[in-house]
Image (cartoon, rainbow, N blue to C red):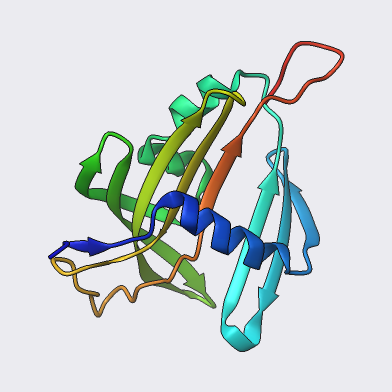
Length: 168
């Protein structure tokens, strides 16, 4: 009996990437040099956000930073705390994220329970970090922080070749 339930990262990426590519993406804004796009399907209560940017760093350097769940504090202003609940292997963890979402004048707590994994595709000098919601029989939903279902959270980090020095 498994403690948590998950699909391999490749299956999550394959099924959700195809689904999300069918969305009509809208450019929203530029925030901290990240181009932010959004899409939604309110009838199914699905809201998606995507961002693109370039860094003056190697793909490996960015990957080494982003594979650490604590790095989310740098870019996710809703994140208040996180806890690694289970280390499955060297590449996969079950993590509980606690978020604070502002609604009108109140702040509401939300939780994401996710299985997160990272992989290196050395043949393409590409790195993938992905996560999706999961259920865990030892961690039931708390009343004070309802759970958010995260279909897919992923970073694809790869080199971008320009006339100047390489960027990612």
